[in-house]
Length: 274
Image (cartoon, one colour):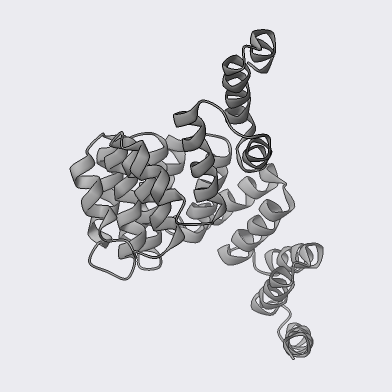
C-alpha cells in the first residue's frame, strides 16, 4: 500500500511541476520520497532540479547534502550544507548535518560550535542539547556535558539526559552523582544494566559488576561479562575467547590477546599482538 501511495504522490508532484514550473516543492517532495525509499540517485536528481528552479530554497540544498552524506560523498555534502546555511544561517537541520561531518572528521570542537545556536532554536533544541552533551562527553568535558543535558531532566527526554549525565559524572569520577543518574534510568532495560555494570566497575566492585552483567544477554552486557571474567580470572576458555573476539573492537582485542598470551607464558606471541 505504501509503495502505491508513493507512486501516486510522485505522479501528482510531477504533474504539479508542469503546472508551476518555477516552484521547487514538487521536486523536493519527489526527492524526499525517493530518499525515504533509499533511491538516492533519483533523490539527488530531484533535489538538483529543485535547486535549479529555486536557488534560494535552502531545504533543497540541505536535503541534497543529506543524500550526498548517505552516498558517502562527504565533500559534496559539506558544500551543500554550507550553501543551505549561507541562505538561512538559523536552519538547524543544516547545522546538524555540518556537525555530523565535523564529527566524522574528528573535529569535535567544531561539531559543538556549529550546533550551539540550535539549543535555543524553535525546531530541535532538545535534540541539539542531547547531541552537544554526547560530544562533550567524547571530549571528556564533563562540566559542559552536564550543563547541556541538565535542562532536559524534567522533560520527555529525561532518560537520554540522565544517561548522558551519568557518563559525564563517571568521566569526572563523581560516583555519588553517577548513581543518582543511574536511579533515573528504566530498571529493566538492557542499556540500564550495561551502565549499572560500568558504574560498579568504576566503584571497583568487580564481583557485583560481573553478577549484574550476567543478568542480561545483550551483546554489550555479554562483552562486559567476558571482559570481567578475563579481568578477574586472567584468562578465558577458548569458546569464550572466540565469542569475545566477535564482540570487541579490534584495538581492544589486540590488547586482550596480548594479555592472554602473556598469562599463558607465550611472551613472543604477546609482543606480536601489541
